[in-house]
Image (tube, rainbow, N blue to C red; front, side):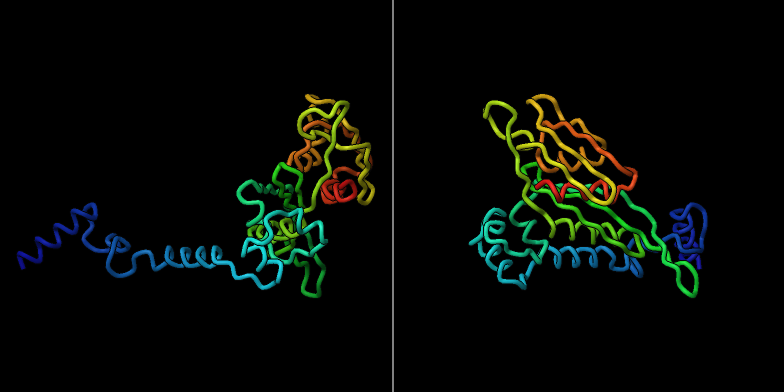
Length: 234
């Protein structure tokens, strides 16, 4: 009895004066972390292990295709986002431009989902846009990132004046349009920077354009159309 009381007293001291309860659980023994960390690690290993299912994917994994330009030269469709990850590598960045709720009227009422707009680019002539709807925000963002990688396109760049150094601006005056939104871009001298609104400025930065003048018209508050204009000027 004395030993049991001493043990109980020691346990109570460890628990801050409470002899009973669940204070000791989770630090080992029964319960613990319930295998949560192991589950995450297993999922990460599955993501890292890529088994290509298309011929293009197998060629990329074997190292026979080493750049996106080889794919664009032959107009090959990209069906696996791991192809972009392998060829571009860690230089590919992504940013969520907007998350907005959308609703559908059903017999039971309104069904709300979330729509995510994501832009990806490597700041070196490649940019892509992904749009995805889902019941959860995280799922929508994840799907939009994958779609953005699959829609990566090359961006043509040029010079203003003398052809000194690397291309830094758009090659000529160009206009992009989506819906009522029209964005016109004019080549700018080196050092001018990107003179544009927040949305096209981010797309131009991801595309690797350093200097450009822009003018936008229409309902630019509709971000979906405002960000899609780039498809007309590549």
